[in-house]
Image 1 (tube, helix red, strand yellow):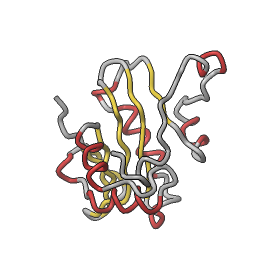
Image 2: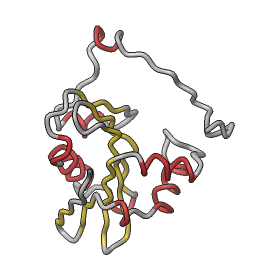
Image 3: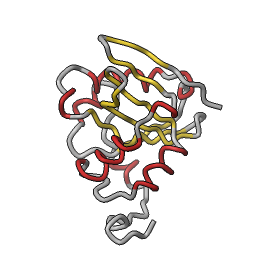
Amino acid sequence: MATANEIEKDGYLISTNPASLDIAVIYQYLSEESYWAQNIPKEVVQRSIDHSLCFGLYYKAQQVGFARLVTDRATFAYLADVFILPGHRGKGLSKWLMETIHTHPEVQGLRRWLLGTRDAHGLYAQFGWTPLPEELAARFMQLHNPDVYKNNQH
């Protein structure tokens, strides 16, 4: 199973130790500031963290960023909930977080990674991410309930 990895740089720390995650910070950002998880219930955030490989970004022991991978650690990963708190943006932290995720030993050799983004294409393109080609996009399907958090249908 997963072992916690930690890496430090310029006073910041990235850790995969689930015990270090500040659920209140993650919940507040996702439920109030993100465009993709508005109104997400706290218990859903906790459950998503419990079943993912999570990367916490910290400054002076305070959580300032986050990302999680939904993965089988063998063939597939879905990158989700990536954020850096506003006061820490513009310092290359999202790029460092992505480097750390991509080089994590438990996700080497995966056949496919996916993510969804509205506004960070430039960040992900630096790491080889590309839009799905039309012929591949036609193969993927979704079951989407965009109002699940509004209606408490979780």
